[in-house]
Length: 511
Ligand SMILES: CC(C)(COP(=O)(O)OP(=O)(O)OC[C@H]1O[C@@H](n2cnc3c(N)ncnc32)[C@H](O)[C@@H]1OP(=O)(O)O)[C@@H](O)C(=O)NCCC(=O)NCCS
Image (tube, rainbow, N blue to C red; front, side, top):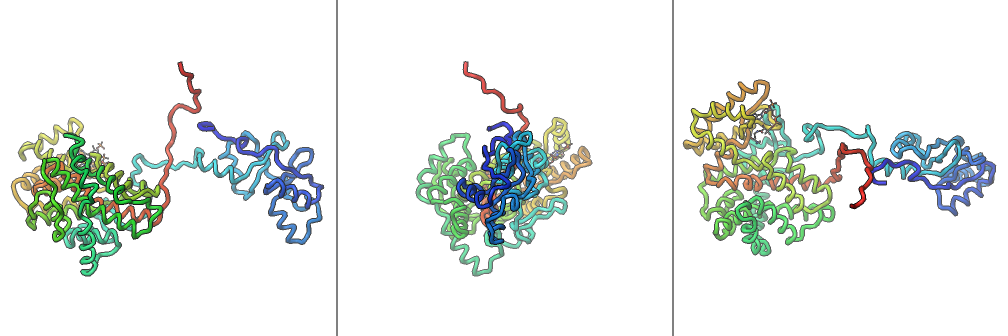
């Protein structure tokens, strides 16, 4: 029946088991037991006049009698349904009555019987017109889950990690504190941090199966492959090599251990892939360094100066989580199927790679390059807008005011100083005034990518590492959401409205 409407006739049992109204109750009960059915249709000249169910038998035995006639115990004048009625319509019109079995009749004559349970199963598999809920394209503004991980308030220019301003966490605490907060639900004490540092520090080392194949992964895609593509492959392999099991089959402690392992080793994988692509040997992690410092160290082999390490740590801490963005949603959808943490992260990395999400933080810097000098900004922006382009690093799907990450990173860029920062600030103010003039009814502000690019450039990160560096921090956010989804799971399975040619079309014969 694929593709066509299912009707009651498709589901009914025919012929139905029947009884006469003047039959002894005990005889009808015996027939029900023998046939293994929960009810019989009571008929006179094949016309339903009542329905006798197990419940009626229970009532009669509670009254300590089985001698009596069917008509005394049956429900008279039962609701009936025609065989050509669509299942969903039948279910909707009958569900309110609480009947379990419905006689199917044509012109008053009994043709069969259908159970409400069967009707419901099919009706729910194929929702009818009217039981769809249409939502805006892209699910914009639609609440699809409850979370305690954090939230973004676009009108206020505010976002938080588990009730604490994410910007305050970024400026006052370390990456590891934020990581602990997201995964464990509270900020760590000193003792907690000591234990946590030892735990995650030991998890940074590449497992042998991965160490062996990373050179091939780095080489495999040739010039098209970058560290993000390599990371996607490596996380998949890691999850298999370390025996990650479906979230459905493991407890929270095991899932947490999986999560810590991936969060800890992702920087090592990215740094190794980056070096291997440049023909250099990977550098082993240094457990004495913090997460961000160690990442920079593994890229170059030099312990970074504290100012740069702190700048990258700020970028990373401020991008751990940011509401129900596309990759976070992706991670939760995969987790909702009960799949393992590795599968959810591979999917999330794929989602992050898209230029409309995390895949283009270097484009804002490319824009600065293209503008070249501050006095060209006005003309360049007008020209770009006239040809329908968006100015990279400006505008945001949620913020209708200043992006707080942009403000914080601008401060960080200023602390690092230099001509690039001065240039970026001049370009920013001109772009904002041109955007305000050309799009007066829009609230277009600088987004996180503008100064993130500047900060990463000043800290010596090559542009191909911008998105992978974003992945280092966002892996922690994804894991927090995966843990939350797994703890209170329901499969995420929305509907789509079919808008193609009406089915079923005849399948053409082969020539
Ligand atoms: C981030 C972005 C996709 C958000 O999109 P959005 O909130 O859905 O905004 P809309 O697409 O509804 O755009 C609103 C209006 O502002 C304009 N606009 C938005 N961002 C703009 C930008 N960066 N440059 C020029 N115009 C922009 C749009 O053209 C649109 O104008 P219209 O209504 O006259 O067509 C968008 O601002 C953008 O493309 N920015 C540049 C890319 C970027 O920096 N991405 C990183 C995001 S963190």
